[in-house]
Amino acid sequence: MKKISLILAAIFLVGSFACKKQETKATLNANATAPVLLNMQEGATIVLKKSDSAVVIDFTWTTASFGQTVVTTYMVQMDKQGNDFASAVTLGVVTNGTQISLSTYDFNNKLLAMEPDPTNPDLPPLALEFRVQATISSYYPASNSTTVHQTITPYFVKIVYPLLFVPGDYQGWNPADSSTSIASVGANTKYQGYIWFGHDNTQYKYCQGPSWTTNWGDDGADGTLNPGGANIVAGPKGYYKLDVDLGTLTHKFLRTDWSIVGDASGGWDADKDMVYDSIAKEWTLTLPLTAAGMKFRANHAWDLNYGDNNANGTLQEGGANIMVPAAGNYKVILNLSGAIYRYKLQAQ
Image (cartoon, rainbow, N blue to C red):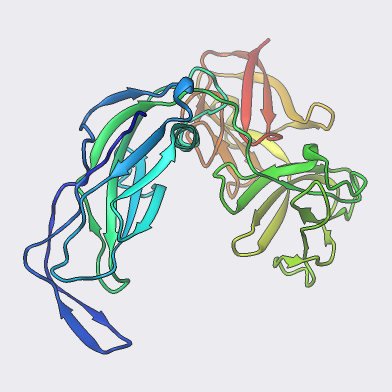
């Protein structure tokens, strides 16, 4: 069985931590050390294979020393290089242990979530950094290992994002209709998506489909979700952005109209309004563009806008300007109907 092991390099810790409940202090030994990753080669380049999907990957490290016997929690973290673990993906957590294990399939799925476009079969390699973090108390700083850098290419599989279904009077109150659902791209408690409500004051709820067994409404129309609660009521008919966090049981909705702005289309405040096709589930507009930058924004304001950080046809909220390759007449297509938001510039 193939295995990948991890160890984290040593750093020194000195100081003390307070236990407020006991009002006592513990002094840490001057020779306290951080955990160390085992057998994880700095700078290695790795290509994962689908044929190895069942192979277990072991992340292993040495124990941290705090100069005394304490309960220690270890967390293996991964992030893109240069991000300083600001958006760290947790690979596993263990108490008083020196190893976490996950299948290559599960590890690969975590990598896919970090790809600019995980639906593209031609996946680029990811420049990553790894560390193990040891903690003993919320009153004492975490002990982080030396960062290990590697470049890993995941294999392509179609991601099935977790869905939250949105049954309502606009679609026959069908809790099993996946075409009227929103997705959790991060596979966490946060869901987002866009749905066309074809009449005023649409009523809807959220559920874990395909049944009504677990559903949420909003009893006070205050943005708080209640299990089995009252129907949520939207406003005028239109294209709504829905945001839900099941971790905090909160939600919000926003009616949106979309336009193109930028130097490419006449200026950063000269909105060129797009038209929505409820059958194709796309916003479109044909117009002349110059070889310059543009973005999409909602409701003629900058509160909600999309750009393209990776110049690959996928959109990120607040992302970089989209660069038009050459002056000409273009049909611009904006598609916010899937888990990954996309656009196209089609020369006419």
